[in-house]
Length: 171
Image 1 (cartoon, rainbow, N blue to C red):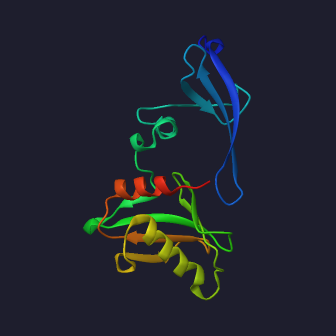
Image 2: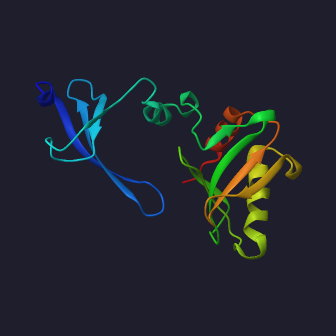
């Protein structure tokens, strides 16, 4: 590992949903700062390295110019021209807003409570405004837990949905 002294080492802690954390020990090139690889263990003897591969720097592209980044996996093109969006909903918020778009999901806040489907109705109306769609062009399905939903939309491509969601993000 003669190349090891020529990299800058740093530690990152990531939230991986539902309270799970992942710690990465990253290595960047000292000359240009390019992210080279990371490992899950701090001790070199125990660690296997995960190297970056072609297309893996989409996060950097998303931060510098979001329109150049690939559409995240949470927004997927389905058969028949439909697009599915994985959404995590936070109810009883101050206002309806899109607060995050990442690989796992689109985080949306709504002011209505989840009881009696009020949050679902508000979510559909809000997403219709964001995406420029009528209620009849959208279907809301159950997700993997009580906070998650799958929104299926018609008449837009996955790229169009992604760009409209990015424009609406309000952290």
